[in-house]
Image (cartoon, rainbow over the protein chains, first blue to last red):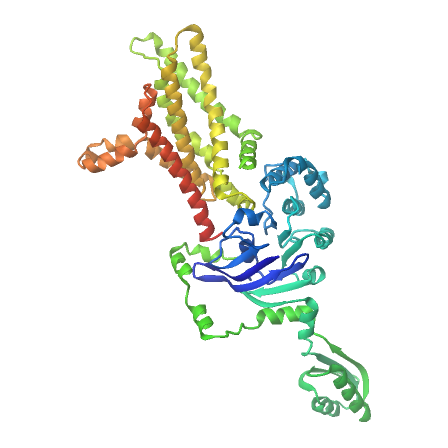
Length: 347
Length: 243
């Protein structure tokens, strides 16, 4: 299990990650979702021990990565955003070097390298210089490196970027298959990918966690904001007043005149959608109006995501508000740093 | 540490790099030897390997930064620094692994020069004790320069800039004693003594003259130790500063 407690990162005075806490359970695929520049890579870099944290703690199987980095890192396989490959090495040489770095026992190295090359379908390029490989292959070589030594935790930063659609599907299947023996943190800004592969998602924006839950729960929790679409034939004024006054309808969002006496209405609902829909239908029919189409629309994950990342973070105390505007001691020390640091803040 | 050492050797020896730089060095060395041999007929000429070594260290100003410029700068440039720093190897071992690999290439480079004393020994006499001292000094001087180059390389991601800055610093190092002896510095005896304490050139001249002094060995070893520590600190500092 990986436990992340109050993780914070400052770049100069700029706060890239703000007091985030979550856990990654064993045999779980955790999606790390957020727009570009949300703090995903920074967080992953801190979890893997590449970047030191300004505050907080990362425990890998009970080992604090800042206190015993060498021991903690043994359980981690990391694929950063840019695959860390040496262009002047051949694929097999590179994997052999990585196996040595990850302390794969000498006798097992050859089999282990063969295993990951087969898994990532890169056996056919094992004798090629990495410099000559396409972006997709480089990405897979980087992924293979992360799998060497069969680490318990895999941290994959946008592993499907740069791959063609077939490869994306392959990589997703590999990630799914890894669930049996590993825990995976998998970052992406592509929502469909995360919803397809992950058990739980952490949604992050501007360094703050906006939500941690399963995809289903996230969808459900936003299901209250349902929308009803109705297409009616007949007197549009009468229809509008019936729909607007129906209990449970909170707001008339849109009316479109579609010609030949047909009008489309879109309204916002609150409460039991089925009941409201039934009421509206019977009221319309009673008044002699013909219903051509009626359906409720659940906000899809895309909308949930957009809403979550755009929702302002509520400050629970005055202290948090003050923290927001006052740099901490760590960051004050860094104030003399190159201003370019801020621009490098996150990618 | 061993995988890093091996990988570094691979990048030196499985590419034309080590061979090109060794060839260049040996060509320069041979040029110097052959001009000395050509001048033997004149009465004023003195043929001494140690004197040749003394002059050859000027070539190091240009050659060693080329050897060391990529050590850390390229790791950063290609994003492979992440791989090293997230693997279960400490930064200290990374620094030592790279240092030992560069020293190995340096040894390979200077070992080629041994052919001249071997040929000379076949047809005449070589003062081995003095020659050994000169080689020890030669090795220590080069190793210290390797540490300077690695330190500079750890500070930038542009290997060309690492080489140029390394050359400037080594140039200053070589001429520090000349500068300290100028009339201007002589006005300030305390400053002069401080500068002279840091000057490595006079210390090397003892080695090339056939003396092994404990203070000189301590000087070079301390310089190597301090520079490697700074390299370690520089990498750690950069992690803390940005990433």
